[in-house]
Amino acid sequence: FLTCPNRIAFCFNGCNLVDIAVGMLVLGLRCFSASNFAQADSKSHSVFLLLLCAVPVMRLLKLLRRFEDFHLILKAFRQASEALPVLLFILSVIVLVFASLIYVLEPRSNIESLPKALWLTVVTVGTVGYGDVVPESAWGSLVTAAMIVVSALYMAIPVGIVGKAFSDVWDDRNKLLMIHRARTRFLERGYKAQDIPAMFCRFDQDSSGELDLPEFIAMMHKMQVTLGTDRLVELFLSLDADGSGGIDDAEFVRTLYPSAHARIYGSKHPSDGTTASEGTTGE
Image (cartoon, one colour):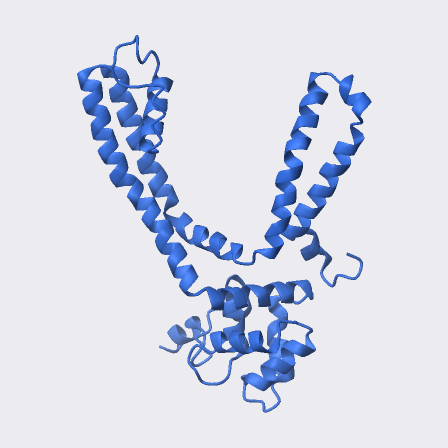
């Protein structure tokens, strides 16, 4: 921690937070000695059991540091989460409509409350079907059968969305992993998106406004971004989308730091360097 170039990034790194949490949990368990635990009250007993159950889970989460592909799953879920609000709203409507119908049609000896009807609806829509609550009347069975068909058709929508998002991310996994590694190395070394233009200007030896492959590799090595030459070549090729053999600082920032690109470069057009406001003023 003392030698880390970016201590803030070190503290907010997910893997480091898991390591700290594991250490605190183990320390908390050691505070409960066998003699004190035998004489502890119910509240202390609950705290001890909570710590005892949390330690193996947190230790297993420490292995996430070794699974870099886990980043791809998170990215796929972030892409699919854009459609979740609408899907959750439709799911709520389906559950409430069928729960109300079951509550009205079923006898009170079977469905005595609306929460119990909601439970039957949720386990049916979720294709779980515990069987602890079943309809008894003919109309209730008819409504439940319709709910099974509707829920089967509905559940195919979010599964398809998540599957399509993961398929797209997996097809582009090499580029995404290279970008993630480069962004992580830059963050660990203490570099920010605002430093990229100055870096490119410094290592642009031929003053062409772009870095070719040797200049790019020299810059990354000078900045101590240790990715390996093969991975640096893959990163350069992924950034050079047009195949021109060079990348500029705007392309680099747009790919690694898309949220910071507009803040650094404004609304500049990449082709002519003019802003949108200048174009409208000239007209």
